[in-house]
Image (cartoon, rainbow, N blue to C red; front, side, top):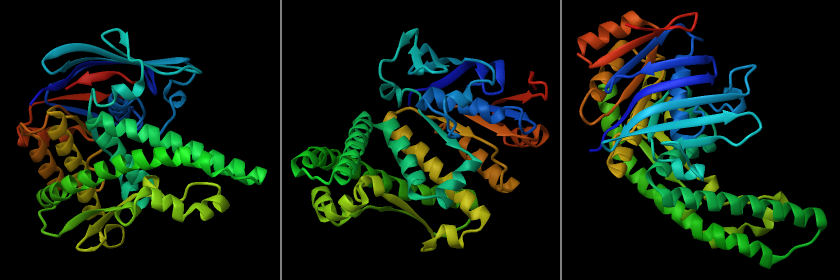
Length: 371
């Protein structure tokens, strides 16, 4: 299994980090400090280096320190036994740039999968509470890191979908219709949609047993948890779907069927976890989901992704956190980054579990102390 290690990180004008430097432990890195001091922003910088976007949903411009025109995230990394320099630059009004060893990556999509990450955050509760789009984003981000073919299919599908929707709006506003024009986009949606569907189906088949296993370890319980892939393509091919809903789409002026409407169904004991799961059960389920995502990534990439654990005590009792840390402190897992508000609590846990770790504290004035 190839190693992936962030040796050093440098942030310039990134969110509230005007200038900060970090020398990381190759196993466990614990970042503590009060809320608002920028702990999560360090993890988000790593997420940026991986997927070229914020985990927290902020735009590129919002991630530049207020009053500045640019931000820079630089890292020294070890990947597959070789040292590399990786940096990502944000500039107001310009396209972001990613460079590896000083050479710019021409297409940002080609960078996805180079530095795989899995992030576990309090925001993950949106996966249970929010609409289907949130769950699709998780699926897409995971499979895209593992497969360039999937990412390319997704990009082509979304482009054709946007063009088809624009064409439907044009037809409605001009009271016209041209079936041959629509078929150009339908052909792309059929071809790429079939690839997306097969990848997602395989992904969920891999996900299910892993989630069950991790859930049992974390919760100590034997409840059955499940993830089901909900897609109209289980019942009908993409072309038939588009044809069956054409009249409806003309009225709605957008494409009402396809893989862009897929969803994941999360259940506990055969019932929706959103309805029957306690906060602790839901949190354990979400962490199990992310650890399963990690395991699938490691298998496909033959490299352990970085694991980012943000504010892990949020709704998790100390026993479950200890279970989680024990689980990830094995050879199967690579480099881990953890944030928490209580340095003493993390210190006691790390010593009890004999973690190979470095603890950093971000002080209220923004200075960083290595404990």
